Image (cartoon, rainbow, N blue to C red):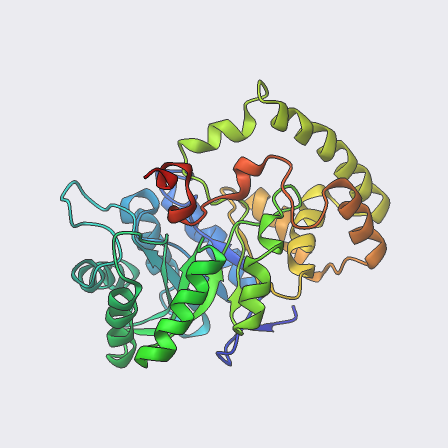
Length: 321
């Protein structure tokens, strides 16, 4: 497996990152089986593992911590904060108050004394980015966190965070975790070029929408989703002609973009993991990319609603007087 440099950090990670959202009550409730899947991924050469405090209310982090006993130093461990972790009004977000508590909770669940990549799970319109970066920078200085990252930030927020870090002498975001796939290519217009311009690493996920909103992605009563079926038929044909499975093509497509460092996979079962691992060694030729571009034009999404989170200040509700 050929490892890639994560942005400008000097840290090298595998082209596939093991996402662990499906380990725990949200997916695979068998803890022992989840640990076996993690160990299989590590044995295959994956050294990048991503989780979040909100996944199964902390259960995913606990499973990851258990699985990494004895090999923690061999893994680039990433987790995220921001989502609500309780009913109390301040148990979420990007405030200093919450960050200081959230990191301690994650460290305890992960059974480690440091997090390699600590990411803001969502942009926070209610909190000044300087406060968030200031608190996160303190964690870096304390040795509890090595690098900082963002997730589903629009391009304007990425730029604001970079300039704030530079102007206030704070630690910058080294990575971004956007939503990206053959069907959802909106970030090619602005987010990915912005990531490249600022020397960040990108670790895309297949979807950034909430679990509740996911149902709309498959509602065939919507014309845009009907269009997806037509596109997928074409993608299957491209994969067949290239001698690849649909999963291999999908992951290799994301990895082919020069801004992308590592594509996040999220297996629930061992069979799903085994079907995803071969993609790490696939490099798509220009002919295959040309055919995918003909199906979904660069910088577009089959259903624009799938593009994920945009800037809150650009939402329709924010345009009123």
